[in-house]
Length: 102
Image (cartoon, rainbow, N blue to C red; front, side, top):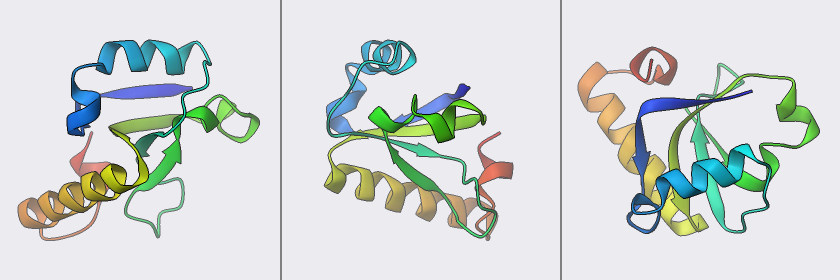
């Protein structure tokens, strides 16, 4: 199941089309070069970056995935994660994304 954060962070290229992209992801349409930043499944990670096309595939269908960010392209997804981790550390002094992005 996909859960969307209330304050979803988006890159410049996805900001205008957030509603359309969310709808396409939920209906299982294949979106090339769209990446979702999620709360990590492994507690040792800070965040996970998953291609949007993979969210409806078998491993993710059975688990709850909370999407906290969305970007178009690998470079933008890396930049988005960098800025989110920087903000997380500045505001909390740590790297517990699950607590911060509730």
